[in-house]
Length: 121
Length: 260
Image (cartoon, rainbow over the protein chains, first blue to last red):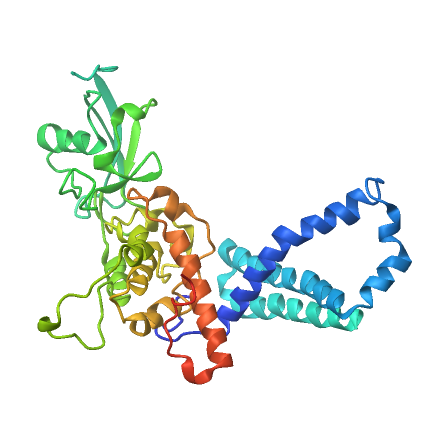
């Protein structure tokens, strides 16, 4: 932003970027696997439907490591959306609303993360 | 071997803007003799020397080294000395000043903003304390050279600034070449200036405005990869910051150490 002080190094921006970046990795590598397995392979019968049965899933989700994995899978892509959406609308000419948009975007991602925690635990 | 001439003349449309005469830039058409071995700069020099001496443009070396002859050719930022007329099949060929820079006159742009940013990242080797000559040179292994060599080819031609939509939208953005050069010196084993460059690099207008469009890397005539430099600088800065949360006393540590 044109008004920002060149010499001030923001402490928060690298954190948003790091979450965006990590979320990008999750979105690119992990989400497609789940879309394929849960969205195609199991419903179409390419894989044994028992692996996605309620009993099996509920057994899996009771394991702490699986919950952590699901939290990462759900929460991190939210930050990718937040960061990308913020920069996109800013580049589309809404730069003057950057601060409220940032609160809205990153706020949604943080809310979504807490929501994921609430559902998973 | 004499180059085979596929056409004898070529039509060019060149942006003209003389502030004392013109209220705004406009195109002027020229038709000049053309041979297959002519680059765009040759055409501009032909016009200047034989057709219209008032045409202004920058150039110096005519061999892709000085970086001063950058123009938009059919909307793409190019070094006019490195792009052949024969590669453009459709006429007229449009030649304009580099976009994203104010026009001073004709194809000459105001590069003050870039020069200010270049200086801000201190693209030279910084030593906390120079060792005396008697102790000899700062030696560097081939491996250490390899770390930064990719980013050292920049000739400051500013094509990447013209190609960068982020710089076009946010003129405060540090931009590709300055970020790549800062990264190049931060990676240099002889350099100790990381902390001095960090304010210009890690500020909001430094690297964080970059949205990784990647056009800087596409248009670079020297095959430098500024987009990679920007991304790696973000990783290094984020790592350094996270490190400073965990070990606050070690926050002065080089931001590039974690990235290589």
